[in-house]
Image (cartoon, rainbow, N blue to C red; front, side, top):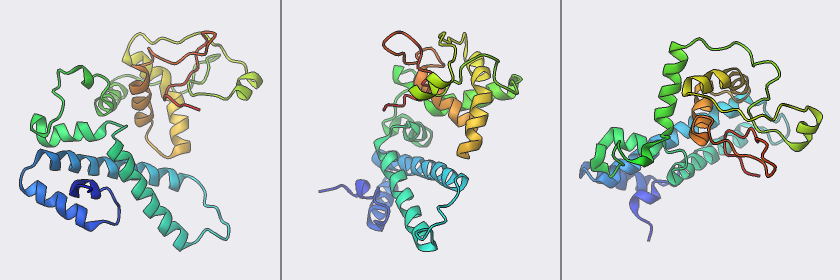
Amino acid sequence: MVAATDSAFVYTDIQGLAGLRRKAQQNSPDAVREAAKQFEAVFIQMMLKSMRDASPGDGGLMDSDQSRFYRDMFDQQIALSLAKQGQLGLGDAIARQLGGDQAGATPPTSPTMIGDPLAMLRQVERIRGSVKMPSSAPVNRPTPFAASAANRNAYPVDDAPYEPSSPVAFVRRMWPHAQEAAQQLGVSPDVLIAQAAHETAWGKSVPRFADGRTSHNLFGIKA
């Protein structure tokens, strides 16, 4: 039988949310963790909405108020499902904020705290606020985002590995590319850089091809 808090991760199930509310009234640590995942779902839903708004509509026969309504419901369910999986790590960070160690969160001294996405986002924002960012990408340097084999053949780039000396160097290196990508996606460039920093340990662990060339894959994208 599915627990009440688990059923709260079905978008249309109000009973599951009622069960979560009861646990919250009892100061249950499980309720804190589940509430944190709900907050994470809201964040994911906002990102999905931004990407939807940034892309043009289909404009075809299937593009209607009804189709957009069901699409929004689908996005909200996807956001809840992704939050339950906890792949972004935001739920754990929010749980620490809401309930501290009583919610079963990992103590700040634990090695698993290294690379916390929310902490990295805050660090990126601090760096951007204190250091002048470049306005354009360096000349003759490869775009840091992953490219297809066809694109690599059509537009040869320098495959020399890039190993930033510090988080500040990483943010400065990525900033112009993140700005360009953020405009296309309709999200904040800070979020893109923070996710790239989380996946690559500030650019020090970028995946490589079998022949040793860098993949420029900063987001852990798998085929």
